[in-house]
Image 1 (tube, rainbow, N blue to C red):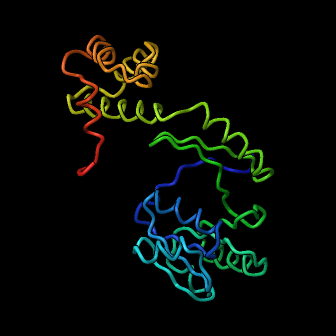
Image 2 (cartoon, one colour):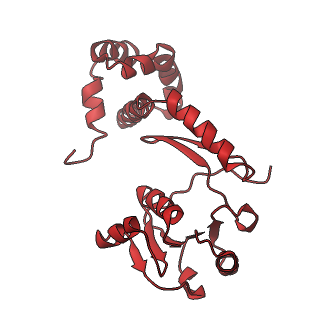
Image 3 (cartoon, helix red, strand yellow):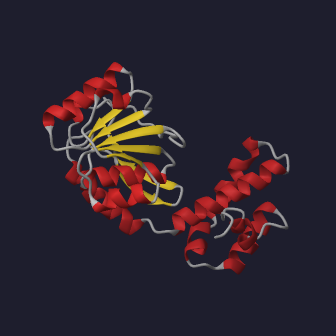
Length: 225
């Protein structure tokens, strides 16, 4: 196996995207969703990147790439249609020991980006080791049809339960059989169908009194939601 699977925490990390087209915009949006501090360098930019800059969601440098642009970055993505430039971006990033991905050029990347299915914090990644992005996309579409928003909701519920159990001084190793029992009792289907009364009864039977679906899910909402 060539690639080491990993999930990166890039919140507040400085990330560079070189390129201003459609592919670059996709990379930028994913980085923003993950909390990165994104800088885009490109003399020409799509309207979506321009809007992100106007909204101050990114730092935009509307000029040609310079080797010094990679300095101080955590992660670098090259998304241009200039092969010579893409290779230079890779060389510059490698010289600084940075994570570097060049779109559609796995041979000059030290990491590749999988196809992703995201349901809230529930994320599935599909990789073909760069051999067939089209096949990864095909599998992603199949998974998107099979895995609905209820998977993200279930994960939020499980996270809220875990937080409450920890606050009550439960030992973490005691959690596993509780969660396994909830899953075995078809909690996912109840969440999918929004059967709140049945969920509450199941939670009380497995966890004890005081565990209510609406109250637990409320802890996952951000202020203003």
